[in-house]
Image 1 (cartoon, one colour):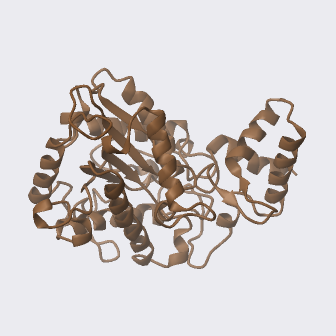
Image 2 (cartoon, helix red, strand yellow):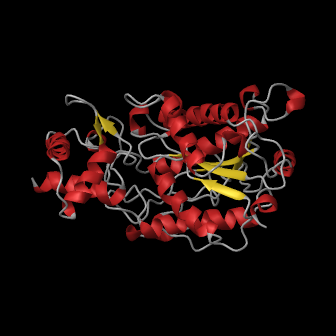
Image 3 (cartoon, one colour):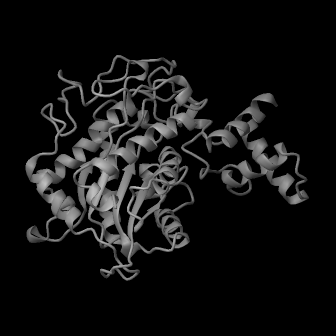
Length: 387
């Protein structure tokens, strides 16, 4: 019983063990909505009186947890090819920005060849795209009183950090007031969910949920011009060792970019970030080295576009435009308490929730501040993000 309550409590605290509160689980007479169960559990803890129907629903959720069918419980079981998950303060892995030697055949640098600078040709594309970003009305036409929508796409880690970013950015006096920040990321919706769906939730529903958030913010898909994507694949270890595990994420990122461009015709730029440090992870969702290796998936997508892949074409003069210009956003990984060169970023145990995977309040703040600094200083972003 204590174990069962503890799992529900962790759902309340961190928004769901398996990439967040949007997770649904089969195995009972109907699919359990864990977001609803989390809310009922919160009310129960607050000593509110639940209706008979609500109490029955919560009891069914508790029973599912007790039988091993709770959110993320299957993800906690060892999987073939999964590394031992012993929480540790550092891994010995070298941040991609600092990597001078090869990692499993891959060189270092955000853009390869040991370089963290955007190659000239890609920067030219990005600056041209950024130059097209301007306030648009709800139909997507230029308007002096229009809006520029910056939206997130991702999972629970993404929405936790981006919701904090939105609060801090909206309070920043330097932010362009015509920029509307919409947190389209959703708990439970990892990279595969956005392109293939998850359980009974089809991808159309995931994108519809993102559009509903736009509507609530008073904007439309035609006004979306910039997106930030931070993604991973739940249970990455089941796909095998690197690069197979990383390639699955890369394929899903490519499809996500293509779908985003189709749904948001005025989308110009997509900034991609890989995971934060996961050395403290206690579940098989996305521990190390998979969180670290996700950076190679991000880099691989950008390299595909730079090499002229037709599926990621962003240049109308070269054929049908299939994707926005793709660049690195802030690189969020550092080797735990050892950090990385160039800044003071470290990941302490207290920066992660109990599962070692989702960021705590301090972890969310770190990501939010890095993202805000990036938007205010990056050459391709400050022109439209800052007043």
